[in-house]
Length: 83
Image (cartoon, rainbow, N blue to C red; front, side, top):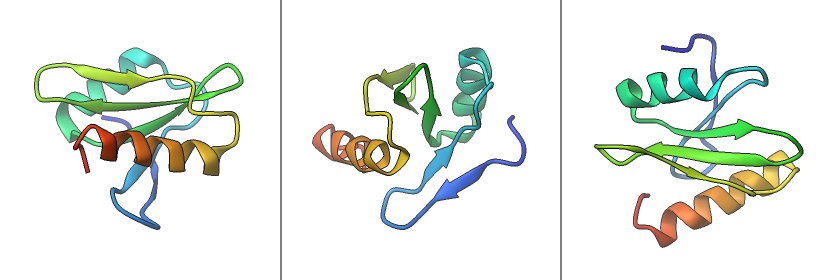
């Protein structure tokens, strides 16, 4: 489990903000247990990740701006019925 994470709960669903430098293996290990929606910084763009119950789904290319990436991730989660 990752420690010291921050969350954006300004609107549903609450999204865990992953700090830079956390590996995808660490994200996957955390998400299997916590089942959080997670926003992960990458090379110039954010990705969203969540657990379906059997696998981790990664939504790439959410944008370079954190606030825009959060909004886009929430929109995509809503379209997938994951809110």
